[in-house]
Length: 313
Ligand SMILES: Cc1cc2nc3c(=O)[nH]c(=O)nc-3n(C[C@H](O)[C@H](O)[C@H](O)COP(=O)(O)O)c2cc1C
Image (cartoon, rainbow, N blue to C red; front, side):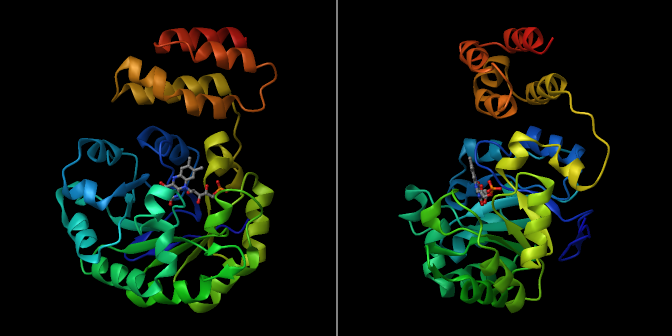
């Protein structure tokens, strides 16, 4: 498989198969699990630079780092170069090695605020943001989409802009904002990124299997892949990409995931917040509809574990 290391500033990843930033999912427990399966790099979910500067408690929680993370990457969003630099210089992000900037979030509340994918319309501001953030001395990476509207691609101009600003790695999600997460990724547009920047280009979008990752890399020439939903459903996809022998026992994996969450969160919070991830783990399991309904009524992890034990035995 097209495995190699990736250099980001002075950091070198063990491989080029990365876990994507995923709001509500890529917390410390999911990142630890993916790292154990061999992910080369993981990211926190996106955090607001304003939230950081206004000392938001929730933002602090999102930035909890696991000791297992060798290269610590946080993803931030915002649209004011000065505020974003200040956020990186703040105590909240002081333990992070690499800062990734979100230029892809399609959600209306972010887009209408001129943040995330809205910046695809404004490459010169994006360039200023990367330039200002790079003054912190931390390597700055970017995650972008190929445009806002299908057919009106901005890939080349946007990659050139953030590359000029000093981006040290660029992840290209091969979909426009209006596609949200649907449809095939556009290999051709991702390939264009590779031709206009001499920093690592990581391809993202629609990778659910090892074959998807191979096709993505072969068709785009990208240096690596970033996996989002595919890793939430099957975090062992990293082991498959690394051609490691891996025996999957879903019941043990779910128990392990719950136990990791319990090292930091109270039992009721885990029982409730883990439901959405649990659904992803159970995707494809025969006769699991009734089980999911039942699991969603539980407010303690012991009942969840007992019910799963009955289901899997
Ligand atoms: C629930 C969810 C949350 C996401 N949160 C983020 C985020 O915080 N930052 C980001 O850059 N992308 C985020 N994304 C986008 C993913 O990182 C990724 O670009 C997208 O899902 C396409 O990859 P996939 O087809 O492998 O899922 C999110 C996607 C989903 C489905």
